Length: 170
Image 1 (spheres, rainbow, N blue to C red):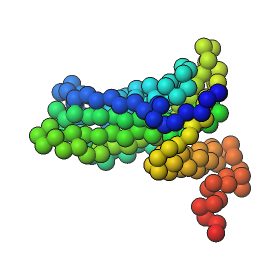
Image 2 (tube, rainbow, N blue to C red):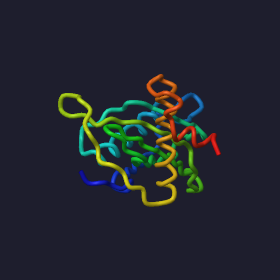
Image 3 (spheres, one colour):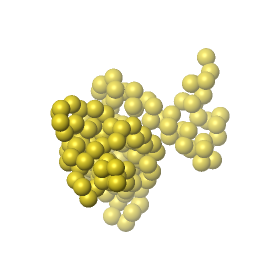
């Protein structure tokens, strides 16, 4: 199986915030943004694995800024690390001010997807070869996040979480 780069999975979706997608303050509903991020992440996971993919977890979401009615929203997703059958997808959300055209980061999220075969059984995915400094940083952090998640779920002994231990020992 050929190793792939994050850019091969990169997915960019741009859309405008419409009135039916806003709350009483005329800002984009958080759930609407979560759905947009899930779709972009799904496409990125599919591009990397070339398999059916399912959302396994929403690991992190940070709503840093409200996204007002009429704003142009761009969701950028790419695989940040591939494991055996799972992939971590890092998502950046950008908002373009409708009056000035200025672009600002509004949100970021980390989702986990699993590749499955036609019967729903997890299947192996290609490994990832990060190229840029940001891709390498996200790649390394993904293993720490995975180990922390496994420790918290009781599926890994803290003593076996080598990446986490490295953060706290000289």
